[in-house]
Length: 317
Ligand code: NAD
Image (cartoon, rainbow, N blue to C red; front, side):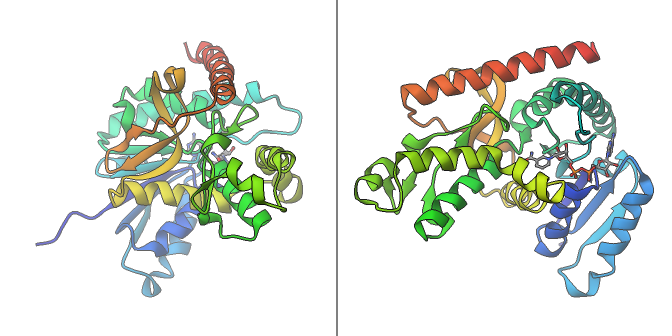
């Protein structure tokens, strides 16, 4: 008996979307991949380019076309939208991309899609909230990429400083994927030891160094964009980690933009939090014990995000 093919649809076949799709294509995680873009020829060309390696990867069929591809998909990944132009304010970008997300939400609903949506388009937390409102889908089935990438940057930078593997560093960047994010240092562990304890005996790391790492994480995207105009490989791999967790029902812990209903004192808002990710999207938001200072940072980040979100909703009302 043949099981149903696992299918992923990507909306937005640009640099981020195709970095993800390129990884997914050779991963063996799904048998079908549908591409949708504002420019249909772009999606068509990308599908052709990937399919031409078909003899060399686990069997997978890549198609391009419209939203009808979403009907029987398990996961939709949204990377489409307008990039920020020089001189354009962040708020102006929000105003444009919230309209784009409204249009996508309407088309996804019409397609009859009944799976999990993962979104990376920026400002990602604003758009994750908006996507749930516009689709009306269950809250757990909308997942923003949130601080998955920022968290990987933190673990890489701490690991690099100490000359240990990034995966031996545990911990999270929380809050908005943006300027108000913060490192939850009270829950960062190195070799199983709380990092605060590790500092007592380390000659490589001290509190000032941690502060610098936190700033470098927050500014990392700007630093990459200054040098190569955009970031896409690391977010592509971050998206693959989220989609893999969904398709394989891993129930693994990742820092995503997840729906908070009181966790960390945040009510009725998607924001960057550690969460258990599996077949149904977010199984639960992990509520760690944060310090008083960290909880205040979370409140601040949520407040800034809520204000931007409420202003953005006025554009589509
Ligand atoms: P890009 O310009 O290379 O690609 C965007 C693609 O979306 C283009 O191919 C464009 O034609 C398409 N598109 C635009 N409007 C569309 C619509 N209505 N329907 C379908 N497709 C549409 O940009 P990029 O570098 O790939 O970035 C994509 C998004 O990802 C941006 O919003 C960017 O800010 C965001 N991003 C997020 C993170 C993160 O951590 N969340 C990291 C990097 C980039």
